[in-house]
Image (cartoon, rainbow, N blue to C red; front, top):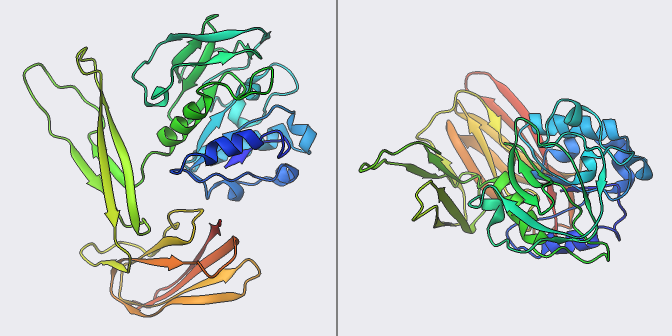
Length: 364
């Protein structure tokens, strides 16, 4: 999700560049609705990219409101990519808890640094965000934000000012994505794409432990887990980045491929402790997505799809299901793009009534 007070025309290059990558889905929040932004607008998305060449007030947005919602979004597990004007010393700055509580990797800047600059010192050369990045020339300028104490500085401009810093939830760029002539900055698209993948992670792939120390002459076992429960049918690709202080192999890439067949997937080997309706994946989707629900007891289940006006579209499940974790594919090829809801009602043999609904977005 791209969040910006800029007009569609002003960020069209950004949208086009991100849509050029087939492994991410990009949408833009309407700038005219910034004044009523809520957490519910952001939670369907793994990563929110914030870009402002204009002030937030120019689109009737409230910098404090936007900052508070972004902080709530991070608290709820979301990830953010930020640009330099969020930390600006003037009227372009963001407000709210995102800034005051130090959610980002930068503190407020004190001045503009205009001129022509290039890529300077790279402090973390093996960081995945820098994969495929070699050229960055800025002819517009940047600012002088201090790197926050909870952040890692990845790279600097050649004048010594920070270019890129990260913490666990936010990637911060001290730049705009275009130069003084309005042209797209060199490897900027690759940087943003890498940032989305690094922040969003791969939900179906995990390793345990994710870090550790191996003494000389020894080895360690690492468990790699692939979880297909929330995945729609198709092929999925990821890369495990293994970084170390070994000068001969500082970064090793391990490609991973997972193929998912279509159909209904029921896992009755694990009995959950509570009723649950999970967020579909992927979301947004086109045209298929997977819906998962958990039943701690055998239950009479109905699962239905509704449009934004509350009209029933179809019934996916209407039968008794055993206790366990159940997943099914929903194909919306006959529906138009828009916001829809899926709702479950489960009546357990223990007498429990469970009702829940979630929003999902079809983008064609």
